Image (cartoon, rainbow, N blue to C red; front, side):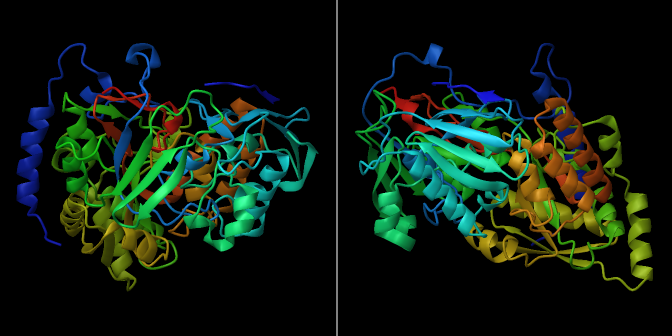
Length: 544
């Protein structure tokens, strides 16, 4: 197996909901002949999923500072500490890079090969690549960085290191990884996003020695930019790395990141010209951006979805009947009409309906809207002494608050009392979801580019994003086998089984596909991105 070198809390009245539903459904009917089929079916159109088209954007111009609005402040730049950091790839780049099909290809690395069916992997490095402090990016630097993930069990990249039996610097530019057993998707471990964990974003060993546990505030990578000034909760400024490994890049003089956690303010900052680009987290931004001819949208549905986490370890959702009742009590047509302006792609599992990992059997296994059956299930639970009052926790973004009102109304109709609680995004992420302090919690879990490690993160026992505590040994085994195999057809079959079993278990309450997006002014060119919104900034330029 060879990976070759590549360049490159109010309740809305049910009557009001019904009236709104009728009006919006009527308005959404009758797509014109030849219209985009995804949009006509009620979805959001995939557009520029992996970035712009260099062939049509013209010759890159040099100079300028790209100003961006993010949905939260960064915790830090240490890859062994989980947090969302849109600037991380600008500082580090990545040894490997995901392709549109979810597999990995070399990026800062030159090659990644296995000749024994995925048991032993050799990574070849490019000659002359240095970190921004002048330290060589060599085999020993890779080993030092991977060892940090091995040593820190809480690292989001730790799970990738568990199969490693040994690491050897064969020569200054070659690392050999000997694994305990075959691991066909091992190259993907070096290609993921900073947020979900990656072994491929590495730090200068000299900087690690110098800064120690303060490396999170003093990152030194081999990416196109270096960290300059950082005033927390205000702005982060990065400047060009003059010794960047890709000749002639980066084109920009610098980058500026501004944390704008309020969804409406973030989008308004783009429309009024305060920022050049925003990282959108919700459907509202994506839809408004796609309807604005003066903006460019980048979006692809990928894997993952928007869902409700059940806490499988606490009543009432440790009972399958109550999970089923909740799902059967949500009218997705009403949800689309009242919350998504009729432009929603419903979710019937972790993988989308157009995914090769979805099957008719798995789709049928996921509960359909059936309020009468939902009422019966709730009545059974109550008859056995169960309480149907549920605290639902979510963020204070306007669309999340509106969804909470919708959920209250839907659940009231089947006998479940929903009590919403709202939090700002940072508090919600740390004090609610990651602390598992909830009965029911909302989240955006997609889109993602590759089923590995994303599905493992949320569906495997102990997964670093499995905040609801879902567990099924059969699913664990299926996920592990899918990661290990080098047979693509077998991997597809295994992920189809994952979809089937987790739908039967009702591991989560899926509502819609995810709508993470990048929205920019048209003068922003050279965008190269993942569906998760992570960007590779070396190619980006400003046409002004």
